[in-house]
Image 1 (cartoon, one colour):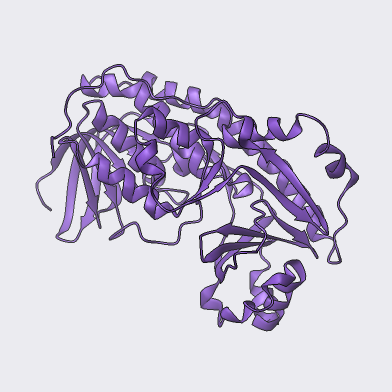
Image 2 (tube, one colour; image 1 turned 180 degrees about the horizontal axis):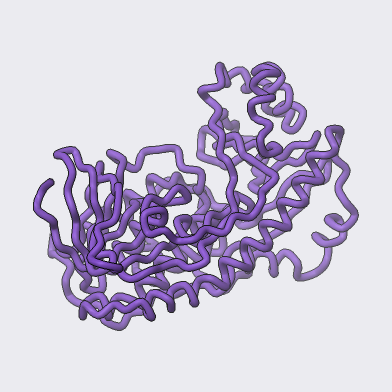
Amino acid sequence: MANPTLQTCCVVGGGPAGVMLGYLLARKGVAVTVLEKHRDFFRDFRGDTVHPSTLELMYELGLLEEFLRLPHQELTKIGGIFGDFAFTVADFRHLPTHCKFVALMPQWDFLDFLSTRARKFSNFDLHMQHEAVDLVRDGDRVVGVKVQTPDGPAEIRADLVVGCDGRHSVIRKAAQLELIEFGVPIDVLWFRISRRGNDPEQLLGNFNYGRALVLINRGDYFQAGLLIRKGSFEGMKTAGLDAFRKTLLQIAPYLDDRVDELKDWDHIKLLSVQLNRLRKWHSPGVLCIGDAAHAMSPAGGVGINLAIQDAVATANLLSDALRDRRVTEDLLAQVQSRREFPTRVTQRVQATAHKAFDRLFRNPGPAKPPWQLKLAVRIPGVQRLMARAVGMGVRPEHIREAGVGPIENAA
């Protein structure tokens, strides 16, 4: 094994939480290494909705104007179609933010953008194809990460290891942190299908015939997600691809000339939806945030934004202590204390949405919109209230400027 490399902070996972945390810590003078097990970011992520809360952070960082030059689509309202009833649930045009819309952008573009800016800091390292396989301990304290690299096994020693490695977190498992699971009645099937310029954009989904179909605009194609009853995918595969195509057409007939693009089941990927959170997010020398600390449902598309909020709170609370190399478990507990409340509230809302989906699955015929939905979307102020809940979330974080040092390379 190669000689261990010493860093102040080692962030495991190059997703939104990991790259944002790495950028923010480097910006504040912390020596930080981010490890990503893949060769690049160019993979079909599912979280492509960049909410106003995240766009506001980009503004606070002075990156917004440049960020919005990347190809993206903007939604000032979001809604859905329930049976034949089209509704708007959130109107972002009145938010107290600089961007009053949701930006639809492939996640690899977001990660490439932020990691490129982070590399301008001399104290930031991003190592691709570096897979964390275990933790390094000194007694009861975590002091680093064991890593599999293209050149063989290595160790990276660090004052703090932050697990941002997703819902199947290696760091969480190695740290033996207790995970609380909540039952979820849904799974999601993800696939691509061509988009036409006159197709309706209903980010919350088309609800009909016991199914819900989400279509995320990616320019010339949709990233599509079909909500199904948990555990039913194998039965759908047995029924055959023609039956799957017919299901899509029942929900969204305007896809008639495109469903044949789905040639085989390899084009359709199963996301087993989870809803869980750690009882304790930390132990001496290690902290988990984002999906590693709390796996979110796709409901509302808030997962990426909640993970980024975690990263901002972590940087705000720990950067000074990391620079001074005096991180204590009490400080790690402050991160959990700050972010656990918004996590609990968001997961409770998602669990309520899951119950609604479960009721939808029980009716395989044409969907009739419930009177509660028709009434709710007509109540004055509801769309603005929902815009704040979806677009900004619970307890939105802001960039704390104290401690920023002049460490950016001229290049």
